[in-house]
Length: 207
Image 1: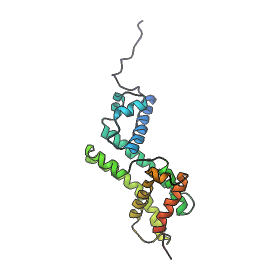
Image 2: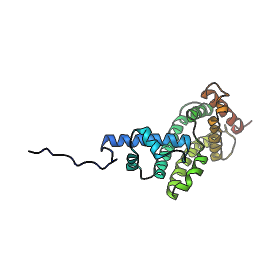
Image 3: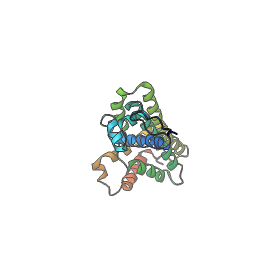
Image 4: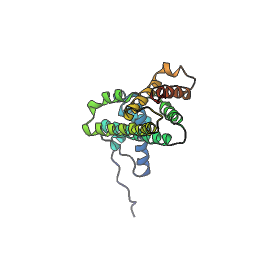
């Protein structure tokens, strides 16, 4: 009786099941980190494949193109950022204490400024992909804006546009990407405390 053999897989096609899901997750996380750190143009699919220990064909099996991988990676990263921001802002403590926790988490790893990254990538993305990324970004601002509005309602923050404050706070944290700014402080925690204090100095309602 002859032994039954399985048909050969197509070249570059990943194994099915758990291995496939694991490879996709690794590609996604690696791409997210590289795109956020370097932007769109400098990162290649071959670079992502090499770091993940897979072939470039395997990357194409999971994601049809670099623009698709970029869109999925960035929206995934932003969704995680939104969830972590919401969790920290919902913790007990003063607004200052909670914003410091948000700032520390955001500044642990330097990353490219979102607008710079999007200006570089937008010519490669279709309108739907651009919309997905913008919507994911807005959700992060909305989480911050909700808490800023709450603090305005209780009189701690002066009346202002909560979305403008959300953008201002996020932009201030981008200073941590500058090496000279990081070198002014012994730790990220020290820098987070100073930047939050600067933000609140302009936002807190003065009696």
